[in-house]
Image (cartoon, rainbow, N blue to C red):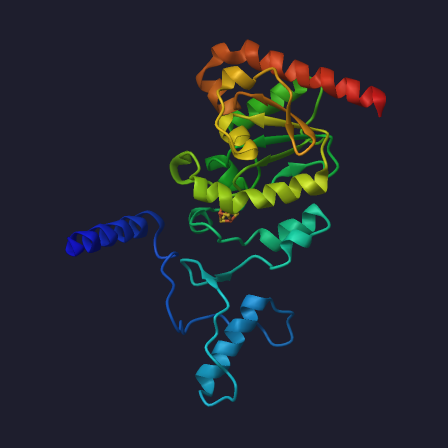
Length: 275
Ligand code: SF4
């Protein structure tokens, strides 16, 4: 019986290792940590490395006990981290600088580029999708592939430019093979999106697809039940429509999307008139 459990656990870790590589398996007393240049401002995690390196040089150093600050080591041994005070960022640029090396979930190890989001930092409208795809991962920008081009056209149809709105995703890194994000990945990454929303303070959110809306509202929905309604997200009006990638696969959904974005435009015009 207990042997069976050990086999199950062994198999589980073997499959995780196969899927994500070595990033989940931290080595104790790693010797090849990169030591920051002398005089350079260093981060907390780097301080831990300096401390550990000093201990290696002189094991007798007084009071130098085992370092327990977590460091995250990528496949090329580069030390990557987020800054502890990222949630106190005052601007989007500051936030981006503090989190763009994130390795909180395994996607940090498989991404090519971190995709923060782009657009107007004071936008009235935020467009929120699911996660970067191959093109986005390659360019480090959201919605730049075929689905992104379609999104640009949809926005233009309601007289909005990409520069006027802010476009982001629930996840900042691409899930392999564009699979649906795992709940654990959403839980790790969503706080960054929440901070972006807090900084931008949009009047409207347009959620693209059910993954985005379910993650934001922490509830499972059916598209047919929520399209055309105004939902609320922490006091912000939220509309939902199909993700442009889904629209590319199902062009017959065009009229519904057109109706949804026209409603957004109407509400936005009313908002502007009162502003
Ligand atoms: S997906 Fe989000 S939580 Fe995961 S590594 Fe990328 S930025 Fe970090």
